[in-house]
Image 1 (cartoon, helix red, strand yellow):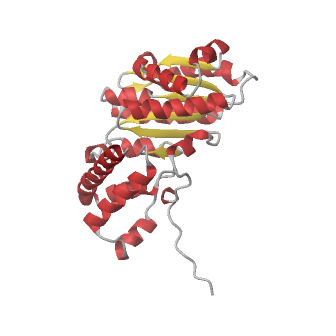
Image 2 (cartoon, one colour):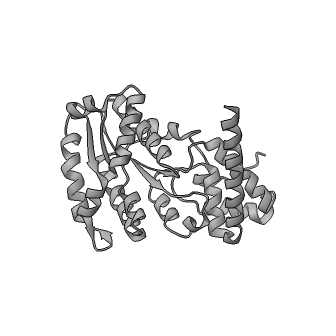
Image 3 (cartoon, one colour):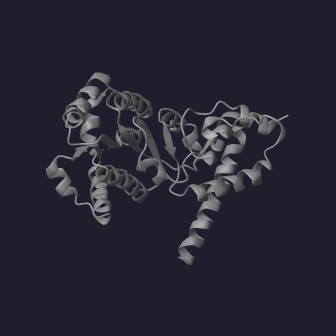
Amino acid sequence: MQTKTAERPHALRTQHPSWQDVVRSPPRPAHIVQICDSDEVLVEGAGYFVSEGLDAGEAVILTGTQDHMSGIRRVLRSRGANPDVYERRGQLVFTDAEEAVNHVLEGDVPDRARFEALAASVMEPLYNDTRWAGLRWWGEMSNVFNKRGLSTAVVHDEEIGDGICRKYGLRLMCSFQCDRFDPQNYNGCLQEVCARHTHVIPAEDYALHRVAVNRAVADVLGEIKGAALQSLLSWKALSCEMPSSQAVLFWLRDTMPEYLPAVLARARAYHRSTMRRTEVGG
């Protein structure tokens, strides 16, 4: 008789081995969030997402700050894509995230009707243009809201953006800057943000993140077994794809929050030490 094994929650099943694999050719619609701890990681991730779309014959909209869009232009050129050529062709459109935030903001939250109308004014022409194989959108409006301290606006922004994503069948990628090893961020809107996406990219190196988190959990909790293992297996995971190491951190936040700061501190230390060794060895 064959024994049936316990099925792991969806978020503990990692389908993609790297963030590049996630953003290269996601399904339509797809709503991806990349958690960034630096401007360099942000522009590299966004630039890769954009260049893959352009290579696939898709139209691409960018809604970012001027500094980040300048960085993305540099990444595109480094990958052999001239953004000026794509702009003149009408395949690549740059829009300002600060201006968009100011336009849609009503009090401390974005106005849905104003947001949807602004998005439609940019997307409809590209969506209906038969020259393009599809439509991608990279944006960081929620990042701008977060930097202004408007955490409620961040969640509303992602909810509205998710509806727009589904309406147009978009491949949408959001960049959200925060320290993924700071326990304070787990008491804020990080989990709310991730829950409103189909895919979560928590690190630029999935293997390194997994090793750092696993070692940290082993140091603080020991081997996950018995009641802890049953808790993990029965935990109601977020309905999005993310590396199992990030899912474990959210599980700790929900079930054993008293251990989370120590795990995050050790994971940060392991991550930093590995990065330093890599840089010296490289």
